[in-house]
Image 1: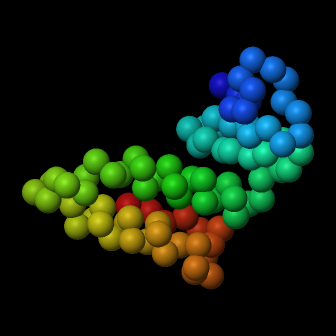
Image 2 (image 1 turned 120 degrees about the horizontal axis):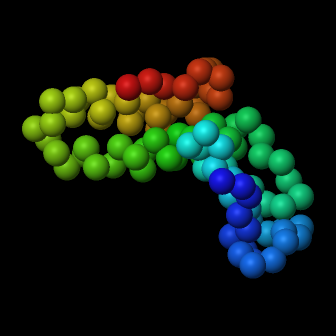
Amino acid sequence: MGISNLTNPDKDPVEGDELVKNENGLVIKWTQGKIPTAEETARSWRDQELIATDWVVPITDHPQHDAYKTYRTKLRDWPSTSDFPDTKPTL
């Protein structure tokens, strides 16, 4: 998938438009005229991981429920660690 203009979907992007790009399964959002930083890209990945694992939260009898809870805690805490943005948490 290429770059999509969220602000004006049928028009070429101009400065200030919000853009989105799907890159290897990672949706990266940024504002036209500004290249996303490594931290912004990492936060975008982290946010998507949290969304992708939301489904397991209410399933308390899931065999990996505790592992998912730990993973989601690591995702939420990751930006405040010295590993951010270089080392992503793993499940």
